[in-house]
Image (cartoon, rainbow, N blue to C red; front, side, top):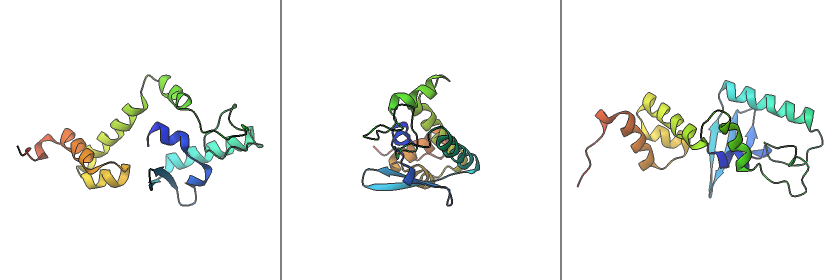
Length: 141
């Protein structure tokens, strides 16, 4: 999921019982299935959010000490998301690309990448060709 999408997440997008997270992308919604670690971390965050900010009126999943009771309920800023990555010297885009490359290395299936990440089929093929150049079809000129 992209950093801007993380910032826009709403509490209603999360279904812990089904372990899913719905992310709106333009006119469609992409469903992410949460693994054990992600489910545990989100549940911990929700407990911490309720403990620290029980009076929070902002419906976004991620809130700060400045946004939790803001009258317009703004989403988390990209800078706030980016700050977490800056602490370890990474860019959100790098993490996104590395995650897709890791999955492409394991599956070599562009259709799987499209379904899992909601990316364009042409982009998925490029990722698979990058990690499996021996399986790439020669370009037609």
